[in-house]
Image (cartoon, rainbow, N blue to C red; front, side):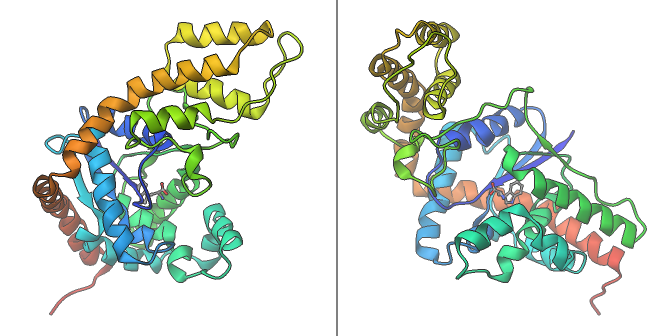
Length: 331
Ligand code: TRP
């Protein structure tokens, strides 16, 4: 059976972008692979160094995972820092990672540009830690969104470099993976091309938003005064509403509004009302489960503990073997 590994950083509540970009694939994969899904709290420290918020969001992500349909009996669900073996593998991979290649990573450059006051070494070596997460279970596949492609490429580079340096075919070269060929893109409600919590809270629909909040956010989504000619190309904000509808509504609904648009008869108020109804139909059952799980700390603790124990089995084995391959010994 193939091994699948992926993680999400606990920097906030999970939104529809996380769901369609990652979680939905996690849920499908848990039935057919040996899956490890974790909460990347070490990674969060590169940008969010305070533990208080982090702990809150670790719980929220675990709750969102479970409410969305991840099953702790099928997948191994754990918190990254409960697996300190990851930190040792990260240290060992750091010796194989070159400064120059790390400096060229686009997510690093982007963070330097946005936060020039916090260019810490953890940020630079972020892809090394990610490689450790993935290779510690010797993964075959990593379900992630398109933005992670470069990190995955580096994971393969480090794996290959390790194999080459120590002259052994030890690590597999894991690939980014998405079900189906069609990657649903989830844009923001504010006209931005990607739903992102760091850009604008109001542009995000969280799985944990109550139905009334979802409705209000959708109704406030950016639109314009409408097309002026038949079959006109859609401006970004309008394209976004259609994309969101594609994700959560029935194909006939989407088609109806496409036609209205092309005939210049579209009423965005009506379209948003329909989108809100369909989005709520999608989020409400998850929201209900979230409420239930939130008040069940004992259960959450049990899930995290059981997950960490299961994850450590393969992590301990990998680190032991890597130490042997490198030739490190404990006297
Ligand atoms: N970098 C990923 C993101 O921002 C999170 C992540 C950390 C991850 N470690 C991982 C994803 C290992 C997949 C596998 O989304």
